[in-house]
Length: 289
Image (cartoon, rainbow, N blue to C red; front, top):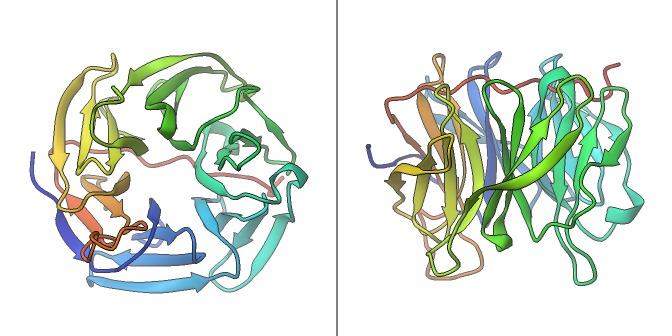
C-alpha cells in the first residue's frame, strides 16, 4: 500500500469527519472545537474554509437535497445550504453540556450520532429520523463513541468506542432502523499503540480504521482480521473516507491535538490511492419529511 500524501496543509486541533460530496465534487471536513467547515477541490487543488460557527461541529451528513446536516454542540442539529442555517433540533436537554463526535447517514435517510462523555456520564448513541424525531438506540454508555460504517449488505453497523479499544458490530434492521445484538468486531489490545478512531467501509466490505496516536490506518477483513495498513506521517490520523468521481481516493483527516510536539503537518488533510474503491455514503433525510 502507498504512503499518505498531503493535499491541504492546515494546523487543525481536531480535523475530523471527511465526506465526499458527489454533487459538488469536493471533499468536506470539519475542525470540531472551533466549529469550522472546510472543503477541498481535487480538480483545482484549492482548500478553503466554508463556514465558522459559534459552537462545536462534531460532524455532518449530506442530505437528499444536497444540503449539509450539521451536528452541533448541546445536541443541536441544523441544515446548511451553502448560505443559510436552519435548525431542525435546537438542543437535546440531556446533551446541553457536551457535543456530538461522529455521525453517519443510513439507508432510508436516518442518521446515527454519538455524543461525548462528560465527568458525570458516558457518551450516548442516538438515531435521528426523517420526520425530525430522535431516540437513544443503545442503553449502554460509550467511552467516546466514534467512527461508524455499514456492511455492504446493509445488515450490520459498525460503531467504534475509542477508549474501550473496541469496534462493535450491531445487527441492523433497515426497515425500522433498530440496532441489536452488539458484539465485538475488533478488540484492540490496550498495549497496542493508538486508539481506534474514525472509519469507513470499502466496496469489498473491508474496514479502514484510523488510529489516534498510532501513526497508521489499519485495514480489516469482514472477520476482523488485520490485512494491511497505511503508515501516517503524523501521530493522529482521525478519520478516513473514500472520494473522487470513482471513489478510488482514500482521504485522511488528522489532528494536532493538545500536544505541542504534534507540529504541522499534523492537522492537515492527506490522501492515498490504495488500489481499492469505496462506495458513496447514504444521504440523510432528517427534517425533509
